[in-house]
Image (cartoon, rainbow, N blue to C red; front, side, top):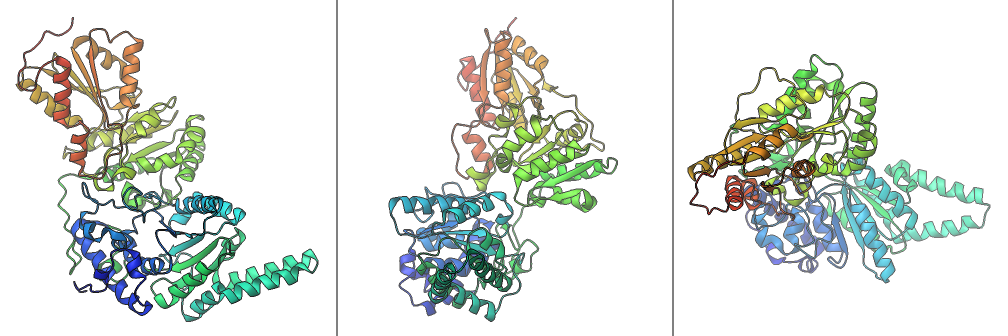
Length: 640
């Protein structure tokens, strides 16, 4: 690997790339791979997927006239080389940092990002919409969607393909197969066949054959069509895509530019081919030894040493919440054979991998298919099992109809373990778990819990095991716990009951979830200013502890609720109870939650401070309610 990038230095935008001779593209790809590795080594982020599509990225921008031709990257974590080639190289070292480039494609960032994507399996739907819009406008540009084989496990991709096949709009889908999950090994013969099948001469011959067949009885015509489909399917494995209305080409070697370029040129020139799927086989982590030899191919990495690949990860001071969940559930399952764990393609991210080690026969990874995961869990629950569906907060949004219709309406005891609740730092807007409290607390008979630390999470997992008459959810953040002592045997909590950690007279702070430490710090600050504060841990967002809320409202001048979620969540439950029971008279209420905006990526602590959910924000809210400034205060008598 070299620091020298003489050809890449000449490329500011893809138009510069297209000025080069095709014989120079191999060097461009090598330099682009080196630049990608060095950038991610300084910022951290998603590396393996991007390394796998370096040649494909170069070929696509060389053949297609981007940005007039629309290029959509599914998921988006494979787009770092794309960003370097599209005018963002000078800022690539700001990747995933506050004020810097997003780790995913983002429309507001560049005209070369026609569609923002961080959740998977959206590219074909979006691409078809763009293709149809082009046709309606009488345009002539191309639309290309690049989707990984993992993203093809989601039903939405097949819904889009089915629709695309029916509309017959000109759309190119590139299936990036980086796990050898579909294709056999590819070689010279496969490359030759792909060039042949995508060529104008073959397409023309195919059309002539169709016209000849049309002269014969319909049975004969259909027999000819079937013979060709299955012959091509036998050679290439593309029969499924053909049946959905796509013209299939592949598989081809995604790292061989001599194979990629002619096929892409042929497909771009075939303006009457309708929807086309090009099957490209790549290697995740390609060209960087440490990534190639890693089990996860360096999918997501911290900053690392380029020479050795060693990642600069700080030693954790406490266990990660996801690991606490996985370990506790594994232990509880030792004495309860009805407990099962479900994940949607995120076993390590949710801690389900730890459960799988102990109970492989009761672990189910359904792929990127959250809708199926929820209803699958509902089916298990209907037969007396205790399913835990471990799904990120923002990913569960994709299965919300199933949560309502298949789980909540039927009161099936599915347990949702909701990871990445609240701010997530560098992953930014698309992965920020802002809405789970709002979209779950509005559902009848749903139990919604939020632990303040890792020990509380252990107790809540035990609590969820025992909830057999309705659905329940535990939402917890990304990252490490607080370092508290863990219980040897987790105990089930009383449903809908919070706890008081500190008694005061003037200000009551009712915290839900991991903002509790900030609430305690705020109480210390207020005490210095002359105001004593009660601090309570709500534990449950639904049902709320009405006795606790009543007591806090009746015995304090100010009540502040704190939650790391959007409006409409925990505070809405509290406010509704106070209003219905005439407890607002004389009470100064402040509800602290996430601002009504999508915040860009930043360090989580900065995001929390920007939202006013840290100790300083809580103190400011209390002082404002009391009519005091930030430096002076005197204890006021509590309400009678």
